[in-house]
Image 1: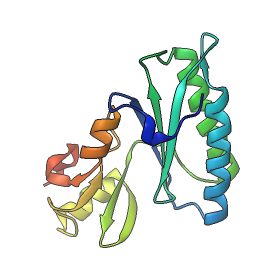
Image 2 (image 1 turned 180 degrees about the vertical axis):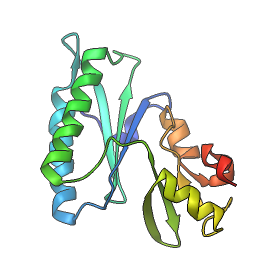
Image 3 (image 1 turned 30 degrees about the horizontal axis):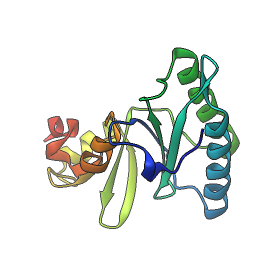
Length: 160
């Protein structure tokens, strides 16, 4: 059951998939339509899941699930991963590789392999105040409060 992302409780479970490039406006519209269609039919053991999504900065697909009615099962999580894999193939993007870092450089959003981010930190091209996207947030409250944060306040701080 698709609901507006804003209606999900702060305890809603969150999954964030970052693209290695921004979606074009046309792609973003298609990705939104496909994600809405997927969430409309997303189930766990035959029960509809109350879920919503956001497409942030035409780059991050954020899925949210209100687990107060029904939680995600292994099969439903597998279905969502399969859906994201289909998006990767359809749009020629990487969404599932967690060994990359996305961060702000001014108004620009950069996406780099972890090794390259480490080199940038060593060269002081990025620093503790660089805003990073902490895609390890677990629920909507953390997403709203701790997703875009200075690197010094995230797991990225080990590079400084």
